[in-house]
Length: 263
Image (cartoon, rainbow, N blue to C red):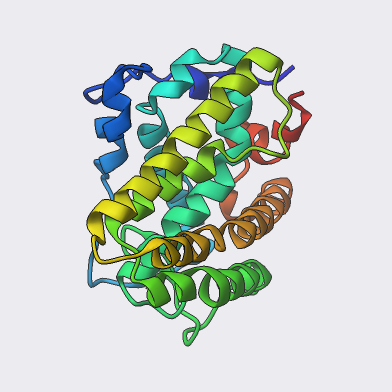
């Protein structure tokens, strides 16, 4: 049975103004929940500290807390069964956090990975040997396949936020009962349509081909984001098992070791 700590992930109260999604005519304008504008606690800073075993646990806690604060306001999650909500939140955690880190890295034009709160992977500085494989593997995917596309298209904040929601509901490898699958698929279509509409409105000079090219470039990130999430989750599961950086705990175990057992 999945533990009580992880169950709390599905029961986090709304902490920001919430939006009642419906199928009214207003949906044609793709008005979006306030939460997508990402009221983040992440603070950009000029102070850069290498990720080490000493600050590993603090980094994990901050990034997961940021993810949970954001996800608490996604309106469609209130329509899911609690068990299915828990499954979605835990299974997508690593992928969405990798997307967040990639965007922060892009924003700061960093050549490693920005983990937030001044903690980074700085390739030119000494690395803890225990973290070397994790950081090198993750940075390779982030830099070569994700931030490179962000730079090429100069992704906007609005596009990032909508892509974050699209990636959350892109769950082709996760099984849901029919009623919950309908909710997830409807949310995915909604945010995909919102992204298309946003690109058309924000780039009025774009013809059909230009819009399609930009959408294709943004969606081209998604397979690499899946890969980054898998790399992230595998290494966190190993670090949890070995208690590297004193990371082992009920929540890290339930997220990185036991989450795939939820069916």
